[in-house]
Picture 1: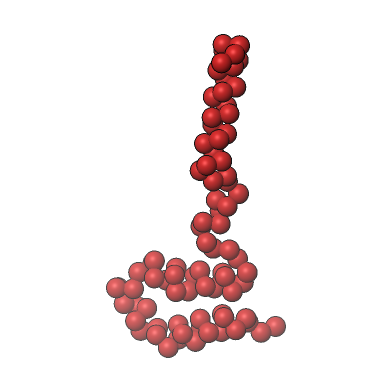
Picture 2 (picture 1 turned 90 degrees about the horizontal axis):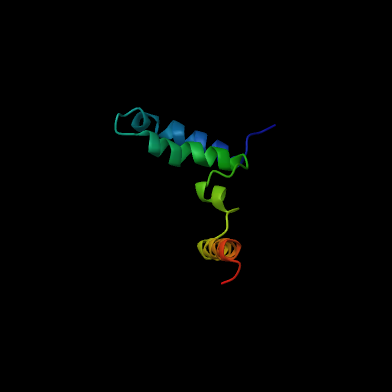
Length: 81
């Protein structure tokens, strides 16, 4: 089974620029952005950190829920508002 085209391209790019990657100026963040993330994306992984929070409600919905909780708490304490 052949590697996906994106991975072949990453390997080729790496081989062409290998000397610059050995430099002390090439850092971990650059490796992550230029090779690690694209590699996993080519394999179908979602490496975007924002997607981890997509299941949480937005700010407006959170405020509505908190207001409802406060209302119900006040109702429980005072019997009515």
